[in-house]
Image 1 (cartoon, rainbow, N blue to C red):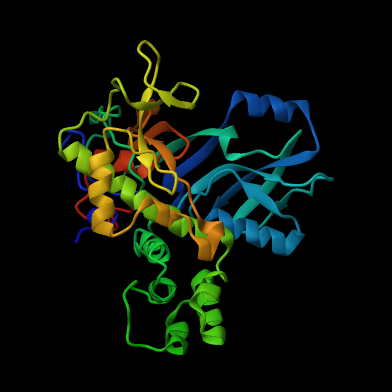
Image 2: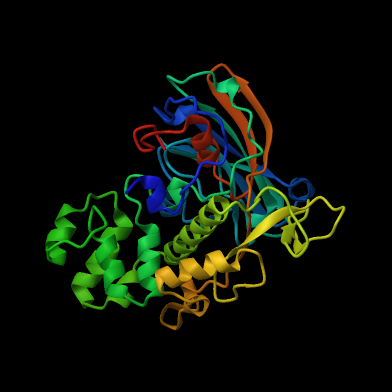
Length: 382
């Protein structure tokens, strides 16, 4: 089974044959900068009681950078989006309580600089886009690709784990209330069940897999799988369920596109996003973009995607109501909608570097996948 099929991606949507090449030979080859809304920028300029910082990092993901900062400075900050370790990233983080801003801080892998104060804590909605600059090495002509408006808004490899795509499998086990299986998947390097006791698995897990080790340690101590999963941060428990929802979404796009559904335009009866990102029904004459259901316990069935989603849920042996998790209420998810196609702006090429801006939540790797058409995504740096 290919990596793409493991995470629900079954199609390419552009006709370009692919330029080949690879990305991320080093973090400097993949640069990401968050873009705040104009309203958020004005709010920070006006001042307030909640400190806002710019976090610059490479070689460490957002969660671990903020955890390390909390250990060294005792300051708890929240991010507007998660950025992985294999990139040079610039993002906004803010305090969740009022008080004096901490001093600027830097370490070998990240730095935090105070850039202003806001009247309220920043939220995810304040970050409207990400600007990317990606070097594609040993490729064909990067400028030959022009189909930026024909790319589906799949969840990218990093949502599932490129080298170890298991986050959605953990989420699936949680939705099935098979908490022991969820621990089992987390605690083995290949994501498959192994005939090893938990103590032996702990010996084999590398130190950097700190979340998995925490879950496994709790399992060894308690023998209670549900309690052990709660050794993972609440953000990760939610992330596992969200990854499974992302897999279902990817499968939905793949099935619909393969069946000839036009996912790049809107029509009567569609649910859409307007130019401000607000959800609503299709209205002729407005600038709207097609929205596809993101299945949760409040799943809205009355769309042209219902039969594809029904087929997927039947195969997965789950129902929308299963996403209300009484046993782990903090990970319950009502679902919602996600844009069907990538909205790619300000696209340009400088030599072997592609630059473009994507709206919040879209994955640059899905644009690059269509450009490169990699035979082996992991070998190509995805």
